[in-house]
Length: 55
Image (cartoon, rainbow, N blue to C red; front, side, top):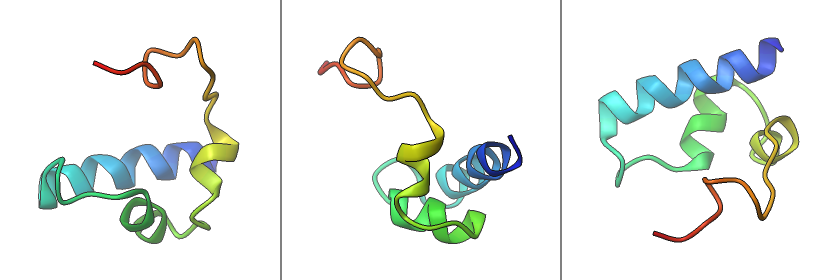
């Protein structure tokens, strides 16, 4: 759970600092000190997730 918490905190800081358009998974991962693929491993991404549906 610590890695997920670090990702959430890093994402919030990056969104505050650079805005939505200026933030990437790479920047979030780097700020959290994890590999770029870790957000996909730590979060439940699926076709039924509201995060994966367009619009």
